Length: 320
Image 1 (cartoon, rainbow, N blue to C red):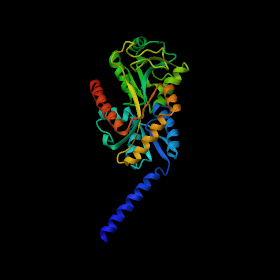
Image 2: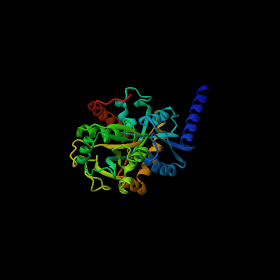
Image 3: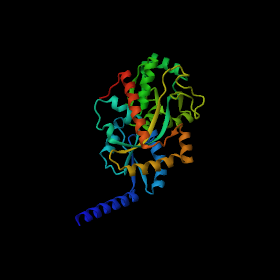
Image 4: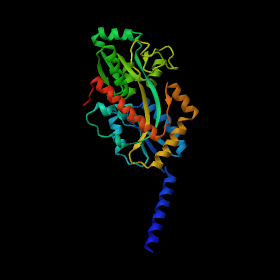
């Protein structure tokens, strides 16, 4: 009799668990953006959230938690319940570069359940329209000869724009003061106000200012020219060798999120990324859509962590 009761209890438990899983999601889902509004992380999250919400039958809302090179938002994610209702639009900064850049972080590599790569974009070297340079060589000369203009901005310490600028300065034998902002939106606004000299930004956040003529684009960090800026040379074409950088952004959940939930989220994200309107919107941003599996994304992140560890070591960079 005891055995029959145990089997019955186990069967009911599995039934209820399966039923509950089949009903997931039963409430709104939040995607944390660890940056201010206006940057690529934010733009990609908002485009994806609209489509995923329709796929999942629940609202997917975006919550910006900017600051500390993505650490504040990332820490909020790992503190949340692993139930699939809180996700993050992770990126190359907090999920790859930070591990080698900081001696101590309030999270570790094992704290995440990767879902899917969302978008990959090149970076672009930009200056304000009023800056009297039109090429990379002219910028190098201008910064070298004018101490008051030896400044560059970025979306935050340790983000790919910051690291790309450090890489650029090493290869160009330049020195300039770094002025970090809490996201690409504030950094773009500051450059529009001519508050520093140059920035290497993720292409989507600077593209509108380039198209409107308020920024001059001097070079892109992709290995080939981008369709949206056919007249802008690559770094190699501009005379800067070994300067190919691709920024990436992807969905992650807290570690311990049930596999079935991760798979549902991946399916919704993949379907969204394969839709024609999302592909068109990403292409207009100069980006390539992702959609790889959770296992593939996990391997991709691991490879990126190793790559940037070598880059940070070679650059002899460390953050407090």
